[in-house]
Structures are given as C-alpha cells and as structure tokens.
Length: 96
Image (cartoon, rainbow, N blue to C red; front, side, top):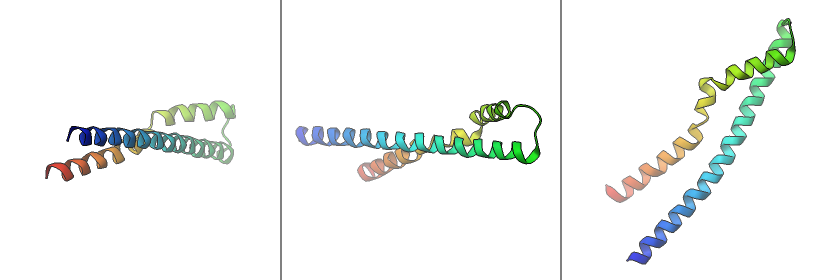
C-alpha cells in the first residue's frame, strides 16, 4: 500500500507542477494583455481630450496608477480559483 500512496503523491506533485506552469503562462499573458489595453485607453484619452504636457509622462503616470488598482490584483484569481477548486474537490472526494 505504501508504493501506491507514493505513486499517487508523485503523480499529484507532477500534476500540480504542470498546473502551476500553465497558470503562470496564463497569468503572464493576462497581465500583458490587461496592461496593453490600459495603455491603449490612456493613449486614446490623451488624444481625444487633448491633454497638455508630455504624452509619455501621462501614460507612465496612468500605468503607475493602474499597477496599484484592484483590477491588477484580481488577475491573481488565475492562481487562487483553480487551486481552491482542486483542493475542495480532493477534500470532498476523500473525506466526505
């Protein structure tokens, strides 16, 4: 019985590692996409409203504000939601 438990743990560790790599790729892609959308909106706002001053400074300040925003933090849900769902599924399957 010890060998099958060890094989299960190794398989589970391998699965979690692959899941972590995939979720990291999704997180990085989503972060880049969200930041580029925000940058495009700032550029559009600068041109539409005819903002005074340097365009790059306006965009840099807008992106610094975005970095502290709630939307940026919500992207961490890419890790939290799937891992929580897997943990709940394992718990329910084994202990209920």
